[in-house]
Length: 77
Length: 200
Image (cartoon, rainbow over all chains, first blue to last red; front, side, top):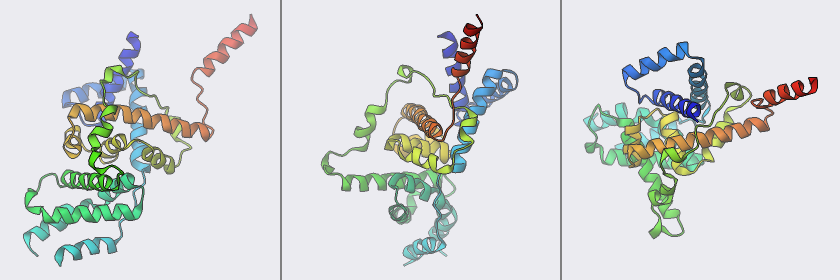
């Protein structure tokens, strides 16, 4: 149970890091641990892979130039 | 060009792609998403005097769009007088300590997945979870910004993100398994033990 709680604490810190919710000192401390602790490295890489995958692959429908022009025309007139 | 028009075109319009992505994942429909985005910009232009130049235009626009979406949802509801977005979703919010833990996703799981699985998985989430994932993981808003956009406390934002990510990762794992990904965690150890037993 103690080990699981520690893993969850690490995951919590990693999530806060990727959410830009850690202070500078805490971020630096986490990054230094990523370099030396394999458990933290693994969790960090897993979360980074997930975050990058989401951002890269979520559907982003195109906005046509006609649509943008329609908006511009509506506010002008 | 008037000052307001200049602000509109230089500070507000550049966020149209992000708004369209958000609207699309709320409505599941390209035309509805366009309508929502257009309505957002009309409202933004109408109330542009409330926008402080050089501040967080993106968050301001997302809040307008979120409110426009809720208003449309209320109109379409069978019981419009009873619809309250936060009442519907508030049962999802609970103390993080009651949740078992984080869902683990191995990196190789993503190797064979196409982007469609992400969209399907995100769109299958309940609206309150979908919203926070879109705002945080896709658009990069901070907890504070999300809190202001969707009008809930920061603690609620974090709680929803925790649950939403676990749910999303679970759905992605299910898709990966359907695609033939084999989760060998535990299986390798079971095989080792079986081999040890057979040798004895």
